[in-house]
Structure formats: structure tokens, C-alpha cells
Length: 237
Image (cartoon, rainbow, N blue to C red; front, side):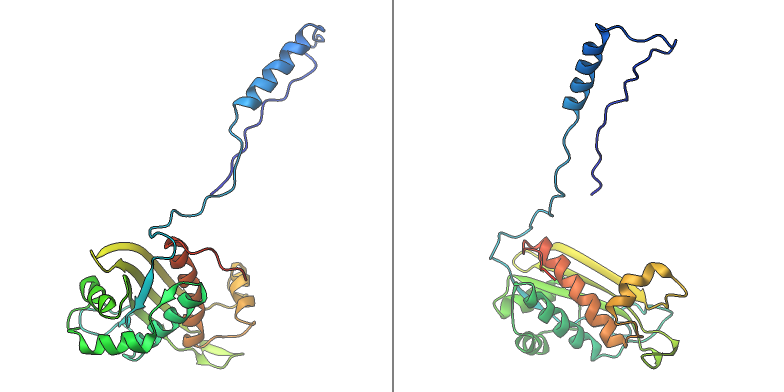
């Protein structure tokens, strides 16, 4: 949120004609200035998003992400297929990061077990909500990993960098209501290509990340944003 400050106009000691203002006009100018400043709303601190769940009531189950190439999934990033085992891996990462924010999260192995027993021929919020309720959660997180390209090279030199794209959504299990969505799409770039990537470059330790490392970093940020949307306090780093 950008905070805008209201400022009064500058009051010159001279009139447009170059004649000095008389002593009686100065109090009037000051009064007008004070009135203008009083009419300005004082800027306040940026407000946090309104929580969509009462504090302390959320219990989350993260189901395996759908992967590009799976039934019903759209191929992303030029039709690249995504390994099937990347879906459960993404769910484990996101569950761990949500737990780090202080959210109550159902054990990933328990969720994956319930998922394997469910009718998952369709991948949608209804199925995710059903699995969440089976494991005692009132929120389900599901997502699609549409791009998961490995780097071609080493940590210090690559022919092609890692690239990741996904979407994650939080669903209220009792009624299937969509509560929050987070999206991510990124291919690592060298600083010589884009200096605006300096924060990401520093975060990665100044090296080329693997796709797993890139996904893990991204899901950590997603977990923080989803947790804030659900009412958890910001995590201090």
C-alpha cells in the first residue's frame, strides 16, 4: 500500500505583483495553512490482510500437487512433462513450511496415505476437501505443478537454468469454499541478464539452483503468504 501525504501549498511572503503582504494578511495565511493541514488524513501503517479464519482454528492438510502430464493437467512451460513424484514432494515441502509459520498441519505421510485410498481419478477441491476431513483437517491445500525443469550444468555454470511454475489454493473443507490462491513462475537468471534479480541471486547464495532448491524456496514464500491470509502472524527472519 502506498501512503500518500497531504501537504499544503507554499505561502509566499510576496503577492504576485511583488508587493509585500500586510501584517493583517499573515495570520489569515497561517490559519488557511493550518486548516488545510488539519483536513489531510494522517497516514497510518499498512494494514495486514483480514484473516479468513478465526485465529487458532485452522488445521491444514496438503494433498499431493497435480503434475503436468497427469490426467486433467495442462502441460506448462512449452509442454514440458513433470515427474509424477514431484507432486507429493511439493506437498511435503509446502506442509513443512506451513508448519514453520506456526500453522497446525496434518503430518504429510498421513495425508498421502489418505490420498492413496481416496478416489483420485478427478483432481479438484471436492476430493481434496474430502481427504482433509478424513485426516481431521478443516482446510485443504491443493495445487498444480505445471513446470519443473532441471538446470543443465552445475552450481557455477549452466547451459539452461532451473525453472518452476505452480499454483496452490486453500479450500475450506466443510463447504468447499476457495479461501486463498498463490501462484509462482520463475526461471533463474544471471545478474548480467537482469540486475533486478539481485535479491533472488543473494538468497540463492550466488549460484545456480537445482529445480528442487528453487521449488523449496518458492514454497516457503507461498507458505508465508497463505498463513498470513489465514490469520497467522508474520514470521520474523
